Image (cartoon, rainbow, N blue to C red):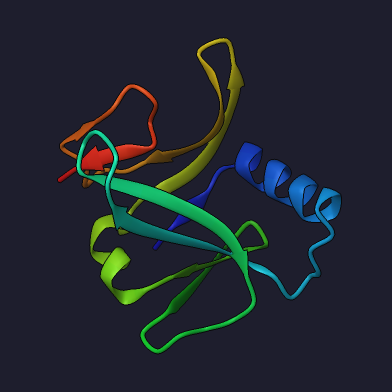
Length: 108
């Protein structure tokens, strides 16, 4: 399961309104190769489901995760930070053995 923090929910709701997405759009979270630690997170809004996709709902936010990414993301919390150390979505991933300084890539 993927969890969504209160701050991440607020930011997702704000972005959906600002960027004109419809209520049918969901947040797609995936893992791709790359970044300084070997794997990186990808966030997009999406309405299409592919074979093997799973949908999780937390705090009214529906999150789509593909089958391959699920192996890396199980138990992850999507958070949002707007503090002095950086602004943006963060992944609190218990499966990551290390993360890079920017928080956008990780290794298992």
